Length: 255
Ligand code: ARG
Image 1 (cartoon, rainbow, N blue to C red):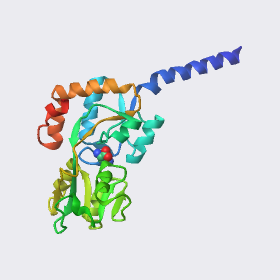
Image 2 (tube, helix red, strand yellow):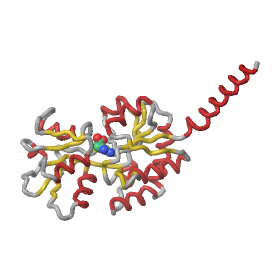
Image 3 (cartoon, rainbow, N blue to C red):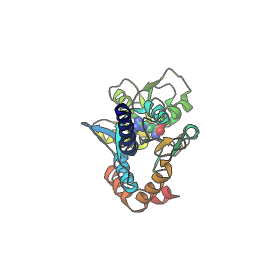
Image 4 (spheres, rainbow, N blue to C red):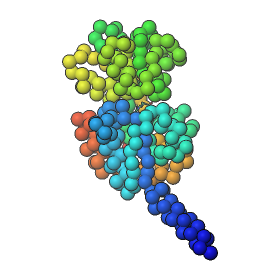
């Protein structure tokens, strides 16, 4: 009698915990080595994505926690449910859409080539024969590969974009292919260096970032609605202004 009561008590406690604590907080994953979207300031993760996420979650009335899980782990973590959402300057691609869901787009991007004065790069085709750095598993890698070919020994893969840019600064590689705003941030943060940026509309297409979710995630609708509201009510423009110093083209984002 006593034993069964105890078991009952335990079972209901576990159920209560699962109902209250477990399910409620949304776990968001990121790779905080991609300024100005997400980077570490001491222990804090800061950036455009971080502020946008806060605005969207507030609008949606959801409690969340942002974790710096790293780039590669984002994908399996969404699949195995250890994170519910990822925000990390993630480009919405056809390949990723086969396996994941995305919210509506929140940022337009393209690729840029960053290099130092003295390296002769006028267009993406000049990447041929240069030692190039990219972050593994990013659209920057795929863009570079479309020029120089897959598994080209001149193409060096880095775990983070920050590490690729550090290698460029040290002179270990000649060029980095990365997202436009990240390349511009590198220029801004190295004012005494002769960093050059080249874009190439012919080879590097426009792409859009979205929040990434597990395939079939129930959060999609809620987040889409909140994101639209934040874009329409001016909060998005405020955050954009803070991180990029200009006004966003909200019209094109909403179309
Ligand atoms: N936009 C690119 C992609 O989706 C690069 C994103 C990298 N983001 C990051 N936080 N490291 O592949």
